[in-house]
Length: 404
Image (tube, rainbow, N blue to C red; front, side, top):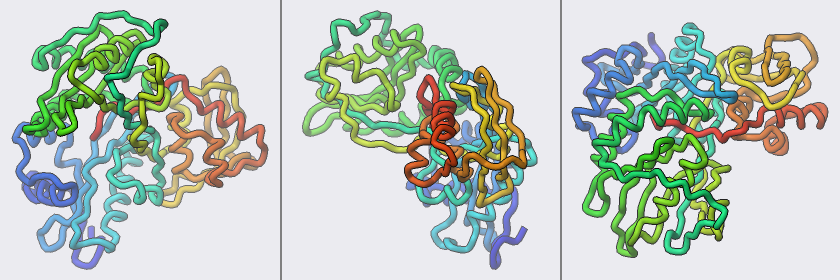
């Protein structure tokens, strides 16, 4: 398929792998000669035949790849989604429509497969709204001065955490993660290659100042962390903490904040993480950054909206605009006892919004009232806006399961 002057688009093949690695290393600041373990496992996770490449005179100048993922949505339900990754255009071929052409073909394939959602983790935040994507997970980077962190007398102290050698912890983590992801909107099923790739990347990051990975394991949770030896003192970085229960959460944080010789602990938490409320001084959990963890696009609005549950009854018509594909239109969303029905309608719209805005609301991370205040959503009646805002809320924060 010709997509620009001298540039064609086709499915990738094994013969393209070296050129793809060079393009991705150039685009994301990596190495064109990665760990052989990562190469092998990535081929299992992202089959090359499901990737697209843009080619100019036998040179790979564009790339995108995809895999089908199982995503948890509100109500402890799951939905099949197309996960897109490694989207890159060579710096020599910008502004030629290559990204749009690759995305057009990729999304046409997803529509043919009948998947209601497309998801990805974005390296830049200004590109994808024009393709109908919205951020759906909020991540907060925090630092805690461990030296002054004290738990309230009322905070649980359940114990049950074990210092576990990483090699012994590895087989224990996937079952705990799977229990956690079944409860958590935004979390995906995590295949074995994804675990292996993540651990291999962490091992490659070890330097004279950064240690290897340590593991804390609880029957209902775990934490992976490492130390950084700074000139100002030793810091601990929580790489991943997953807790199925509030008691596991408290137990793991009691252990993390009990690390001797560490003056600061860094972590990424959700907006409603209970950690600050466990401490005598909640200010110690200091937010140092706030960013998106996952982006989504609704490929089939009735199917996507019918896949999750809602927090209140609703009878509303949404007029959705789609600047990229043909997924927009007017849709009647009716919810009774949390269970939805959604279908196209000719009724007059109560709310008008872009498909990217609907995606941002989908997992409950972004509220309708805030989007309305920003004039990203228009509601005819404030009562309808209030009902929409309540209905799309969730009991549990959306969290990205694993980065891809």
